[in-house]
Length: 175
Image (cartoon, rainbow, N blue to C red; front, side):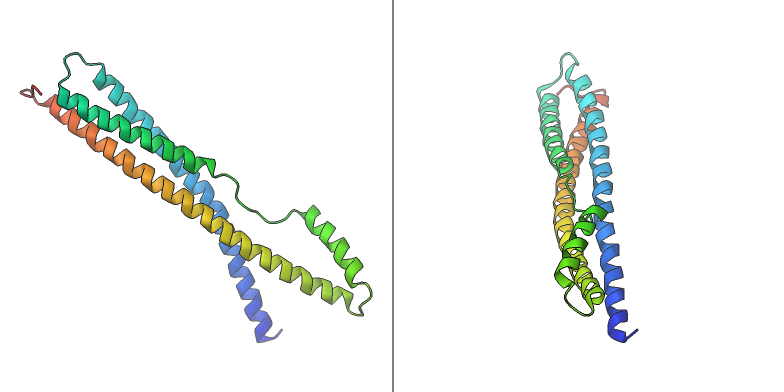
């Protein structure tokens, strides 16, 4: 095997790992989004309990409105992140079999048809892998960005909740 062939094999192996990595990263980002939704639910429950208090001062109501708005933004962003669910995988064995049949017909007249089919297959496979990497990278970057903004909005809501609860805990706070 030549150095060129070894290099191509190494590049294919790296591309395959990267392809798998982006595909798996989508699942990890979905778990992260689900955790954000759990946290949003918890914070929303706290807001509901605080807003149910009688004689809540206008300042505390304002903090709760900010918290609820932040939670609403977080929910929308998280749902948008979860909606990105169509990631690109490798063609099925059936798809490759159909292509193989077409390639056998196409290369049949040539002397080294098997070698030509193999070269064609590896070129198509490599091209599809690189295209999948590109598309899945874009999807994971978008999903990650939405999760990041949802987490920021959740962090704002957490800060508003913490401030509200700290003020409620003060014995002298009258609003």
